[in-house]
Image (cartoon, rainbow, N blue to C red):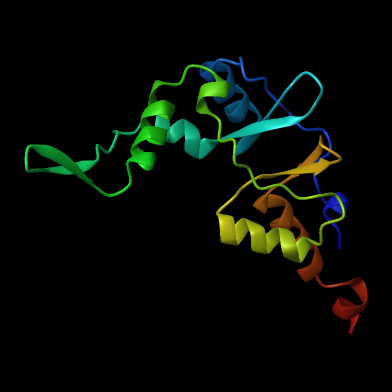
Length: 159
């Protein structure tokens, strides 16, 4: 089965200038786990997920450092701290969104989509065709498919 067969085709999108309060309202109102950020031509620029909104309100984890020979040595990765801090201070989608977004095409096999979701901990995943956003697929879509496939057919229930 291909992505195009179960993806949501009418995708709610936002622009980089969309305020965070509007993003939260849209996600709550439409029960979304993520919203693609597109430009005026419909090209994917990033993604804002419910996780991004939660990080925005979480406590920032400052990097651990130790003084060594009149210098400071950071322990760990300061990149994670920088991303957390940027998201905490974000006021628009452009500041909050993730730009490294895994995508699939409409002809991608559903099993490959499921593997990508698991491997990249990505949900939902934008569906892109020739640079244009054409749909979105989520874990919920895969679960609906699973339920549909697991339901007994009328012949099985008669026997």
